[in-house]
Length: 321
Image (cartoon, rainbow, N blue to C red; front, side):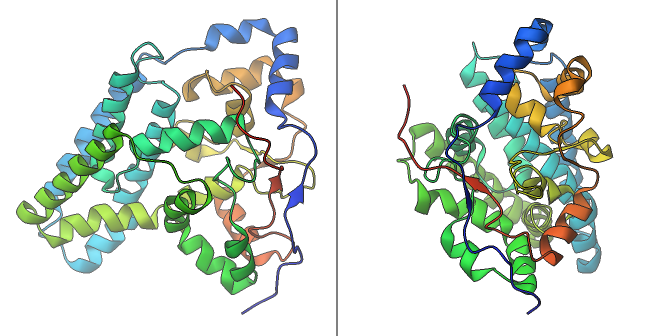
């Protein structure tokens, strides 16, 4: 089973999440960052082209051997689908068409969701924006593992299994921690996605639907590109709750690795986050950072000082309006 994790509880903080304070400090010194606010005009076209190419690739899968399908799903299809998931993350921040056109953003997210196979684009926004506003809140931040997860997966082998099952925990955790009544658009998006999945199964075959779904699930688990799930907020250095990664995988993940910059300035599109760091290096260069998402996964699993408990948490104080 391997070594047990040394932590027996989360790191509880009496302070507010740090990003609003740092954003205020940075803007006082560098108000020009506000010029970066708003969507990147090229982003929506990148999403549309990537989605169309991924949908087109489905027509070449059915004649391949099963072993080739699985390898291709892990090495290519899942990576593209994960990229589209992070495009949906950008869309949740209205980076498709801007905040004046919320329905266009939602429709773009639903379209990008099609090759992923797992209907989440509309629901994701409802929870993700609260993760930003209430980072660490024991109820409202559903990015934080539950006590059940932390207690069950508290060894080297347990953490390995937990990483493999990450997509299921991310999907199911909100329903237990902070359930919300589904909106009409959420229901419609699920129906559209399931209808598309059924069409793929019916007309393209079992291998293709497996390629879609297995690729998405594998690329959210024990996969280099999924390292960002853990690198972003797990406490690798005591007292620090958000970490940036400045490596090459940012190229295919819309710069989600610039995570301190993203939480400080969620109105800046991923393509411009490197400019935030360039404008205000004194606020970012000395923060702990990651250089490899693969190393993050390895350290998380093997280091007994890190595990699901290695998160900074705050007592729930209720919603602010």
